[in-house]
Amino acid sequence: MEGENSSIEKGLLVKKEENANTTPLLVFTTFIIVSASFSFGVALGHTAGTMASIMEDLDLSITQFSVFGSLLTFGGMLGAIFSATIADSFGCKMTLWISEVFCISGWFAIALAKNIIWLDLGRFFVGIGVGLLSYVVPVYIAEITPKTVRGTYTFSNQLLQNCGVATAYYLGNFISWRIIALIGILPCLIQLVGLFFVPESPRWLAKEGRDEECEVVLQKLRGDEADIVKETREIMISVDASANISMRSLFKRKYSHQLTIGVGLMLLQQLSGSAGLGYYVGSVFDLAGFPSRIGMTVLSIVVVPKAILGLILVERWGRRPLLMASAFGLCLGCISLALAFGLKGVPGINVNVTPTLAFIGILTFVMMFAAGLGALPWIIMSEIFPMDMKVVAGSLVSITNWFTGWIVSYCFNFMLLWSPTGTFIIFATICGATIVFAWCLVPETRGLTLEEIQLRRAH
Image (cartoon, rainbow, N blue to C red; front, side, top):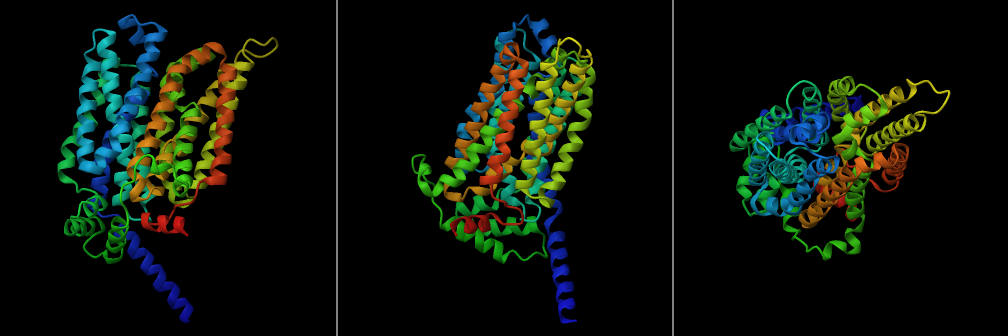
């Protein structure tokens, strides 16, 4: 009887904690933080269905268009260099405001471009903006959310990105690429205004010595009835025990495990071919003989539900199992694409085999990327780095992601000209390596506070 009463009390306590996790302010703040991620998604999908029309309107060669597409990642790399430093010095809110200045001006330049110079400059500016966003958004959300829902809330960043990608994929079939650029501005304006009404990160406030403000903000985020004494104390202890380290110190042995995980996941995410396939999926459909308009429309329909599935599973399955399942799905998608192009033109093979296998491969790849590998490296990055290495480590892994994405997005079209089959065999091998990497090195962080994750690392 006593054990039964204990179980009931424990259940009520858990229920009370879950209710305290979803305050209106927390939901609103998260929405404002991730709103510009929609614009990020539009930027990722902008070139996929508009390649032919942009090249025709501005008389671009395949090389010029490849440069245009890759400038998003090149600008992102530049934004990533400064993102963590700006966030550490001026706070996450100020970093997001700066990001919006670049995004809005970049989208206007693309929408009004009359030549390749303005087109490239606009893409580069949008890249700087989303480069700042890519680091700050997951870190900001991780620092304001409680441990029981942190993964779900942080995954909403990927959900909004996929909404933007889906919008660009779908609308690219029907409306001008200039109009799509103007659509990319709308979520930026929402965030620009909304940031005036959301609080700064409690951990950043504590780091700046604004302890009373930290407690007030944390209480508002958790709700009036929530007991924040323990969480506040853990934050204060963590901040007091940390001091930002230099880039040289980052490579000391005690930081090697977290650094290997952070950099490794970013490399594997981009080397899976996600940037190339995301930017130029329309041309892959055309190369396989599948109607690109139908393919893009189907992708725009399925990508968001799969991101919602990932948002649900990230706290139920955990980060590590979801990461491995996602990488396995990407591997299967790449194998299907390699087979599709390997069988193309082979005597005795039905002509419909290549477009069918290519469609299945692309659909599998995009869906499984949306459900896991698209968001999880950024979620894990925001969780595993302690306060003292967050600035330099966050900058390094963000730069790694964007630099690798730049290389892949620029080389992708040329790789397809070399060998579509060989291209996707390479990507399938890397996706397989991701499964092994996650199994051997990536820790499970579900259900732990950021401070508890560091304590577990220390022991």
